[in-house]
Length: 236
Image 1 (cartoon, helix red, strand yellow):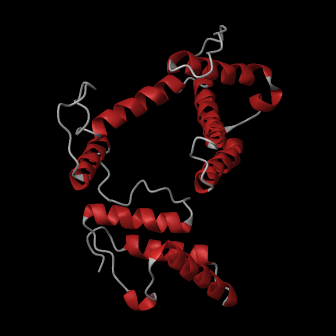
Image 2 (cartoon, rainbow, N blue to C red; image 1 turned 45 degrees about the vertical axis):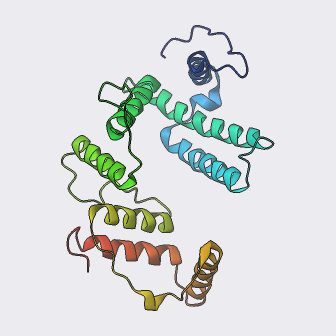
Image 3 (cartoon, rainbow, N blue to C red; image 1 turned 180 degrees about the horizontal axis):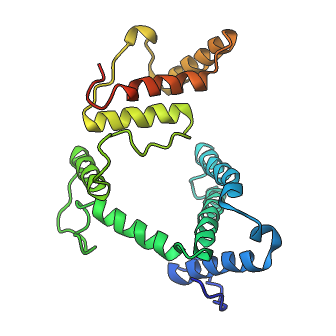
């Protein structure tokens, strides 16, 4: 990927991903070489764009742009997000650390290792698979432990910069998969049915927090910290 020799533009609609991806990586490299604005970018300055493009993908999906009539909208947003990945990889390639090739091959290997119900270790397909999602999760978690043998706490590796609600959801998911009990406090939340009612309850919680001068984001982060501080085997 370090070379910038011209590669022909792939034909629209082509199913051959190789030339299309190589050409895109080449365009990113050429922008870094010849465009002063792109050349000035850093990992840190790109973060705001990475967040923005991620949220635009979410917005496109939530707006229903997944059908045939609106799919170009989602395609464009996914392309913008992919551009961010390629820029970060190119910055690392320029310093000699790794390239987009390493990103792609690393991801491919990870998906093969973590999905033994689909792939053999050599990457070939298994003859049989399973529909047992619990078994699939166990295999995924076992592969992750093999990749990170020093990681003993189930909450390690959760990005602290996640929005508070996503952080709480990810923390509880990790707890469930590790067999760590999450204390139930049904008396603190009125009964609800469905997503809309839950959304209304959360909206009301934010309103009440504002009335009391409480930052709901900080409050929820504090609750997550208190839970994880108890340790993976002591939550009660």
